[in-house]
Amino acid sequence: MNSSNSYSSVPDSSKSCLAQLSVDSFAQADDCPHQTQPPQAVIDFIKNLTEPVLAIVDFDETLFLRNSTEEYLSTARPRFLCAVFLIFLDKLKPWNVLPQPFRGAESRDWLRVVLVTLLFPWTWLLWRRRAKALMTTHENHLLSQALAHSQQATPVIASRGFEFIIQPLARYLSIQPQQVIGCRFWAGGRDRHKGKEELIADRIDDDAVQNGILVTDSTDDASLLEVVKYPFLVQWPGARYVPAFSNIYLPFFYLERVKRPDSNFTYQVVIKNHLLSLVLAISWLSSLPLLHVVGTSFLVFSFWCIYEIGYFENDQVAEKYEKKPVLSKTYHQYKSRMDVHQPWIFASIAGLIGVALTYLSNHAQGYSWASLQSTLSQPDQWGIALDFTFWMGILLSIRGLYLGYNYLDEKTRVWVYPFLQISKYLSFLAFTHASKVGLALLIANIFVDWVPYIIYRCGGQRDEFEEQIMRLFIFLLICVGSAFFLHEVEFLKNWQFAVILLWLSIRIRPQLRKLISNAHFVWH
Image (cartoon, rainbow, N blue to C red):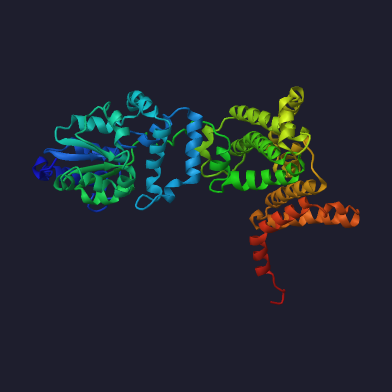
């Protein structure tokens, strides 16, 4: 399209029709161009056109009632591996280190699409096969039929999605758009930073755009909504943004997305508190500490797969039985994704690996690589099988304990809660042993997790609890008290105590500074 004569402006009769619709059902575009309008408004407007006009139609959640980029990514196989890869990308955020002008969140979808397509190249073939079924299920028939029956509207798809993804879907639309305008594969980063208005300007005559209709669901198109003569910002019934692999279970997703959203739970709690405490307490003593650390990591992963079920169940019980349940803002969005059976598969696999590695590291005859090779050459399969059976029994017990906890009243929960924390830290001693210093650290962690819960159940503000200072205080109380009063000086005369003390001292610095800055005499 390169001639302004291709499309003429809508005649006065159509303007009067639009004005009448504005009085009845929505504000005029000139008065409030970004106000959301009912779907029937744009349908009636298209039906009442009497002269040719360009209809610029958004694709995602508009003509197609899902997000084409997310659906494309969901097509990648194997599903679990691809889902983990996308989570890894979201954690790493490589788009934030791209050179200008590609840097930033605008390049997120582009980088995800490019990397998935390159790493899983069969995705494109699977996408072409899946396109017909997707469009059949998720086409916006209300809008497409209105455009198909109109003799005056010439539809053009304009999207910030990707042309190579949209085109296979567009083939199965009830209408045949004159053009499909979207971001390119290799140049998608640049295209997404341009915005839709500039993408359209490269392909369509300015006069046709200015005298045309825009139908979109996104306020990101604000600048284009002000350019066109007839802007329609519409939220369509049935339109949903469904993230890629949102129907697949992944360990820890409930903790990250629901129970503690935006808190980086896996790092802050699972790794930084739980795993690192166990490493310092029990892996320190192993003949092969690095192998023991890897084994302990698998066991911690196995443990949290089952422990996470308890968090999910706790929310379900609250929703069902409590008058004013305290639920995360994302609970209703993700609760259907949680599974109570699949975690056992992950827990079993990780548990078997963890038990085997810790067993080998505990039974190695020395610290050398040769001792490890000797242990690996003649593994005690029965011993590993027995430990694995015992570990699964521990997980079943923890699951039963959490189940009972969730259905008890709040006051009784206060006294069951410490047993959950004991299971979190001391159940690992079934396969290895800890020194007295290591045991002091684990006991300190149990109390640091329990005390804030007591404060919360008694109506206090547990956010005010300085947990890092309390952890160091309890640890020193046990170690120093045992050294001086029980004459067990070995508490203080080893490197393990020094390293744990250093680690805890580093962690208290922010809270200690706050405590010192707030300290004052009462007469001040």
